[in-house]
Image 1 (tube, one colour):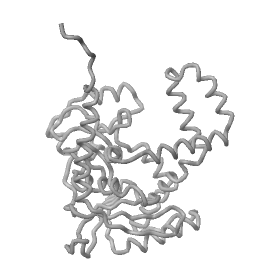
Image 2 (image 1 turned 45 degrees about the vertical axis):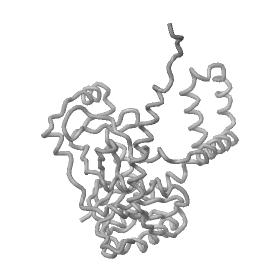
Image 3 (image 1 turned 90 degrees about the vertical axis):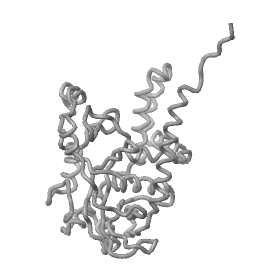
Length: 315
């Protein structure tokens, strides 16, 4: 049976609004998780952030620069405000960052992300066996037909499952847990598989995808809804962050994932607007070895703060 966070019959637009409300509490973007052994909520690293540690971002940084220039060409009036802030680049850093982000939006750089969010929501209709909303575009309908045909051999066990990996101190959300009755690339029964839907290109980032799915496959389910808090109420949120949760209560939020294949997962690649969907096997052995390396890299980066010290002449 499919496990859903979203009530049946809700439209994608309504679900998107609800997802903004029903979201794990965060501090500076990091998920706040009550440890299994009890205690105060702890800020963990998002899985998608964690797996970035080994990624070469030079091409991405160049793309960001190009998109900001495109945004400035489309909305040159924003440059007037930039000119006013040039006198204090450090003091005006936050506003300059916000302006750069605004120019990115104007450039259309986030359009594919929005397309991806929409297709993720629509794919859940397919996985529930429900009719798609009548008002979707023909292109979205073609994409969903491609998704349905590509995933016809899978049974969906869970959708959008929050999980925590205590070894790596990460929290994330799996797209899918799937059952496949065939064999994996090692010739073994595949069984339950961690799956992820990607709506952009998979020409780059294969290692990052393998790391992400491998971390999920070695995680525990974590139900953050057992510790509700209104994050918009600053006083309530501050008190919540200081609350010591007893170990017995905290442990109830954790439960094992269904036994999942530790060697292989699947990427479902549905490029938005293509009408094509391809399923790829993902090597989770490579993924987890790399995730453990990423953990060492993150530790080494923190050591850099202690690498320099003032030079003092011997007495």
